[in-house]
Image (cartoon, one colour):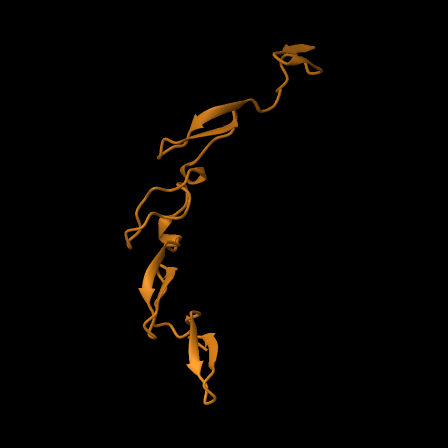
Length: 124
C-alpha cells in the first residue's frame, strides 16, 4: 500500500490518489483578493466573494461582490428624495419619486366637519 501524509491508502503507489482537498489561501485572478479553497480547486475572476468597492454611475459603491458584474447591479443606497406631495422620504437611489407606485406613508390629519381630525397616510 501507498503511505500518504494522513495515513495509509489501499491504493498502490502508481494509482491516482485523487484531488488534494487540503485548504489553502489562493489568489483570485484579476483582483488579487484571496480565498480559502481546496488546494486542487482552480479559481476564476468571477468567483471572488469579497464585497465590491467599484463605484456605480450614480456615485455610490456597488452593492455586489467583487467577482460579479457591476452593470447588472442596481444601487441599494437610501437617499433623501422629495415626493410630489412635498414630503421628504428615503428611497433607494434609482427610484423615481414621481413614480405613481411610490406612495407617501407619512401621517397627515384631515379635518372633519365635526371638528375632529382623521389621521391617514398622506398617499391614501
